[in-house]
Length: 307
Image 1 (cartoon, rainbow, N blue to C red):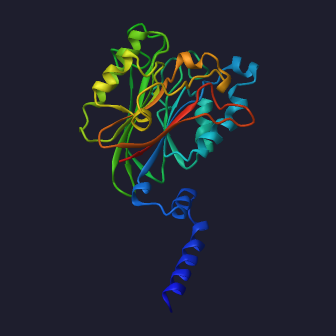
Image 2: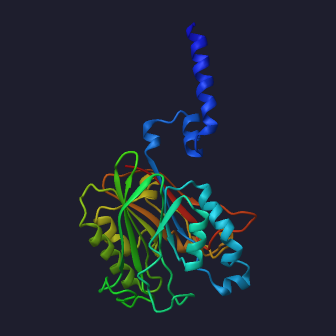
Image 3: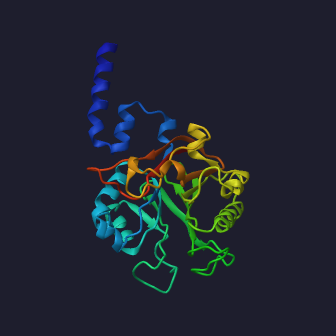
């Protein structure tokens, strides 16, 4: 068999296998993906907007947005998602829709005495792909001077705030990474500064090279004092690492998207930070809508990172 015919048959055989591969693998094979591309982890931070009766009355409640929200997240083909503003019915919808993922950090310890409804309290669970990662450890602590007291508040924070974290091991490579997900206070500037310091200090107990990611709604602009401790603690903003330092554009938009006039003055408040042996490769603000309807009052943010 001559070389031309052999190459043709090999090419046909490889093409025949493509439809049998998962979507990500198919795309990688079709593009001739390198080993480096195969090691990319896609991270999302998604403030999905807590389910509110007042939003239902305006036509932007969870019942009207649920399918849009979950579909847009799925279209991104994430490996890991840090959620903010999640109530129990929303957590149940996420689990049902993303049945090949695990959701950590919603169930217990409870944040307040109310088992149902919204009482100024929502949770920040972390979702990860079970086929790619094994859960090694995880936990919750409260962003206060008494971090082991559920629902505790300090520094004039308007609401009890917490951080969830997981430590994962990739099945294929055995590499480990840690993800912390939070939602800082929306009123007290001092609370935001102290809450960020607390997270940086807690994360510093791990090995210096351990890949760590910090996702969340920080309720503050990129040049705020809130991030002084984060930057000096060795964390790098994945968006800045790819696009350069500067205002990236707003992420909170009150369901108005590009029409939100206050957006430019408010700036970006949703971030994905990286620490340790991890390299940001791509990052974007996800501005997708379906039939003119947005999944949340926030744009979501993504980062592709390599360990």
